[in-house]
Length: 178
Image (tube, rainbow, N blue to C red; front, side, top):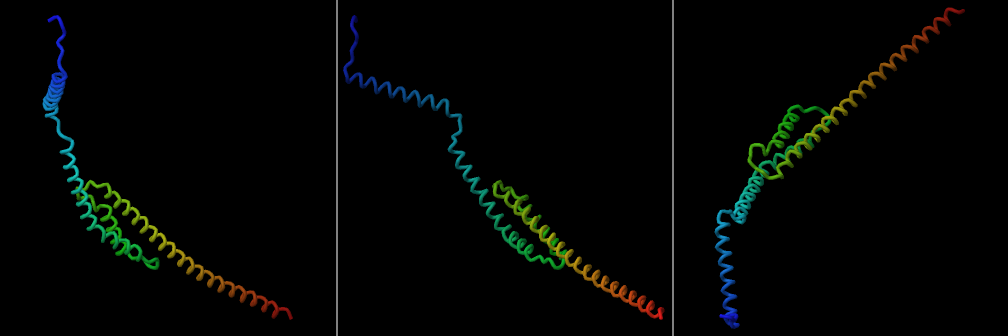
């Protein structure tokens, strides 16, 4: 035993493969022991994909319900005339705008696109208010034109009366001077 034990090439290869197999076996056993309590992130991915798809379907169904309301409300706002106030139509438009703003309130849809409907409702409200302001301004313009006409007619009448009075005074003064 005074010399080193030398292994042949074949034995060295077997020993190397034996150590590799032992290393992989140890890693596998330790991996199973330590990682058995952890949940796989890939199992949650499928569940999240299914939930996301169901949320998109819920949003699409609700969107199909709200789409005609959007179109009809816009058409009604466009059809408002500046000629005469229409309180029943204005009340209906206000109710429709509120319905659009609250169209996703009762549903449990967590899609971020639902926030766009609140913005659409605010736009419709702004557009409706602009239409009402334009109607009030045109009504004021008509009223001012009517008042101007009445005032100018009254002014012409007063001017005619003043001219007649001046002529009457002149004619009296001419008649009194002989």
